[in-house]
Structures are given as structure tokens and as C-alpha cells.
Length: 295
Image (cartoon, rainbow, N blue to C red; front, side):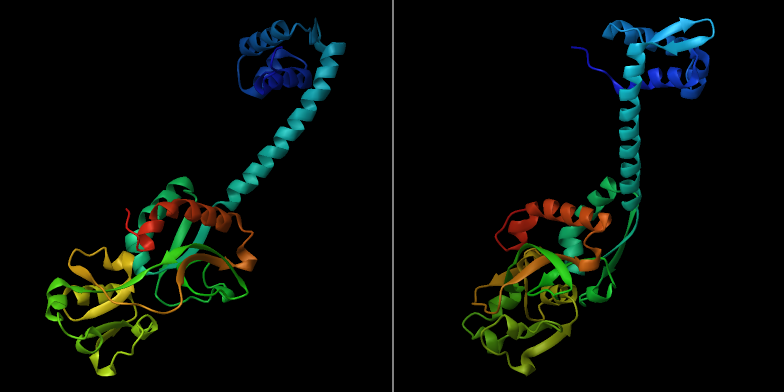
């Protein structure tokens, strides 16, 4: 059995359409001898005479006409596939607005966004790095990667993994607390948008909160400088060789890391590509984000 190659059929179609080798060669952008060689090779390999070689040009044989009908059908399907692929390619270009937090970008997402760019070089990533929950329901961003407990009904999301929290302080500061009641003796550094009381079973005296910030990054710096203790995601706390974890119970509802978009954008080729990419790439980070160790 001889397999028919599509590029061979293109030469047959060109000769049939143009009526001569020279005209077919011009249409295909090759020379006369190339067309003749490919045509003769096709006929020899498949044991069929496709054309009558007349003084007036090339005329299809009966077998050639049958072959032409099939070739035209294949050509139509190939053209349709090319159009659809071209359309998909156009959909995978332009701007994709992504929002996340500074800590996630620095410690987790940076390398993955670089890989995404290499895979989809025509997509321009427009990053908004903020602790604020951008209003995806109002289409302020296309995709969000951030911590969430519940999702608005207008949003669609995929849970990437559980976020584990812990209490951290500098080694020197933690040593000073030995033998003392940590909750009431320590100074605390707190996220303005997520009170430490959300994670710790007992209330911290208001006067013991010495610093509030709208991001974990400045809290990390303050804790490294010995200003107090901070309750933060373990993947942030464990990223610092100046901090150590304090052994104390935590409470509160489980919190997860999601990739999120608006329902109206869920069918976008760019959003779909980004969702599938992040779901696949972050598998290697699951254990670290969940506070279970790992790279």
C-alpha cells in the first residue's frame, strides 16, 4: 500500500488547474523540472497515469479525474483547517490582563509567566500587582490568581491548592519570647485586609499591633528586622532565612489559591490557554504553597 502525501497532490492539482508544467511551476513557485519530477514520481509510485501528455498540454485521464475529485475535497478540508487554525492563532494574541499579589508574583508566578510568554509570544501580559480584590465581576481584569474562600456567582475559577498559614518572627525576637505568653507578650505585624485574629484563636490586644500594611511583603521585612510576629502564608515565611516559625495553634476557615475569571470571558481562547497553563505548571508548587515543604 502506497501512502498518498498531500504535498504530492498539490502538484497534481496545480497541473490540472493550469494545464501545463510551466504554468503549474509558476503557480507553485518552483521550476519546471521539479513539477515534472514530482508528477512522474507520483504516477510511478502509485502505478497510475494521471495525465495524457498532449501537444496542447496535460489532460486528465479517467483515473486522473477520479483522483482530482478526491484531491479537491482534501484541498477544501485543508483550507478550512488552515482558516480555523489561523483564527485560533489570532485569538492567541493581544493583551491578557492578569492580577495577583506581590508575594505570589515574586515567589511562585514569576518563572511561570516567563514560560507562558515563551509558549505564547503574541500575548502581551498586562500585570496588576495588588492585595486588593480587583472587581473581576466588572471586568477590571481578565484573570486573577489569588487567595479566596468563596467565589462570586458571576465568576468561574479553579482551585489550585490549599494555602497554609503560620506565625513567623526573627530568631532573636522569638528567643525573647521564651517562657512568655506569645499572644499577649509579642508585638504583632498585621495585614490590613486580613486581620491576624482571623487565624489565631484568641484576640490580640489592640495595643500589641505595632504595624499594619496592605501587603505581606513589608510585613516580611518588618519581621526580619525583629519588630514582631506576623501570621502569613507559609510559602512566604519559609522563603526567608531570617525567620523561624512559632509553634502555636491557628484557627479560621481553610483558604485556597484560585485562578479566576469572569463567566463572560471563560470562552476566550487566551483565558482558556492561561487557565490550562497555570493549572498544569503550578502542580510542582503545590506542596510548598500548602506548607508541606518541597521546591
